[in-house]
Length: 353
Image (tube, rainbow, N blue to C red; front, top):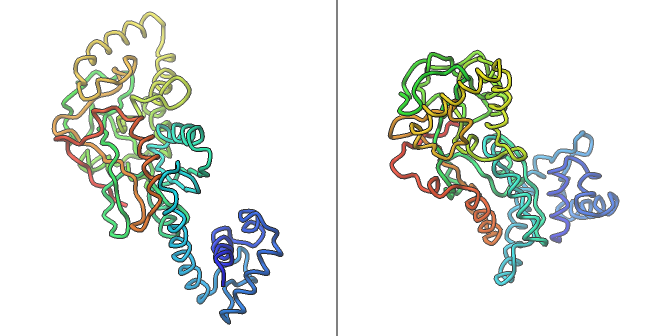
């Protein structure tokens, strides 16, 4: 039995077939198949049911693969012991939830590639439940998720805390600070939500007292905001989505609000209304002081203690790639305004998964 054979059976299990596993392992399918057959002969049992498509592990094979994953993790730790003075290298698979991916994924992709040429990385945008499932299966090693999750088998390292802010349509005339989170219809609007796969949905309902389930559900923050811009209601956003560039030179919120403002009617009337709204909102949203000026007619903050969500690096308890972990943590924190790196006296909203 060799580590190479164990690596091959793990690859077949993850990729669902011998051909894709061979491509992943950079060998020919006959070479990979022969090594797995030798392993099966040695242990006296079939590891895979080859009659099914995709190929699946047998009951006995599942136990072998689970143990092989543990053995490979321990073997990789030995290699890690001799890299103390080197830059991060090897492989890492990272998952992040859709409500942070537009802000963090571009920076991670660019910076990891520029700084660490010996590091092979893959990044996936997935809902929390899928990231946790794949992490437990050994397919994802690190996750950037809303926490606390409360799983005993996963560790959590908080990165930052961002406010929940309200995003209103162009005709909103209410206050821009000290909103009551218990108000049944904030500003007189129905609340539009993300779909049930998103933990941000349950957190939004918690902020507003679980009173505002909407007949409209969206799959992304961008779609949420576009629906608000068209007068379908209001929504909640994580603060970073409103204050940080996400697409090109304009933020996600900036892009959406800009499209809305362009359709508000005669230029003079729209411009005057926009200036009036910005002036009213400018000094009111102290908790969102870095919101782009042209968004301040859309964004409003809640009264103290303001609701926040915690974003953390999540990992299996036996995660050992410390240099990679530290590098990713450093890159993420560099994207976050200093005032969002501590929770302070704000109210942490729990996560339901």
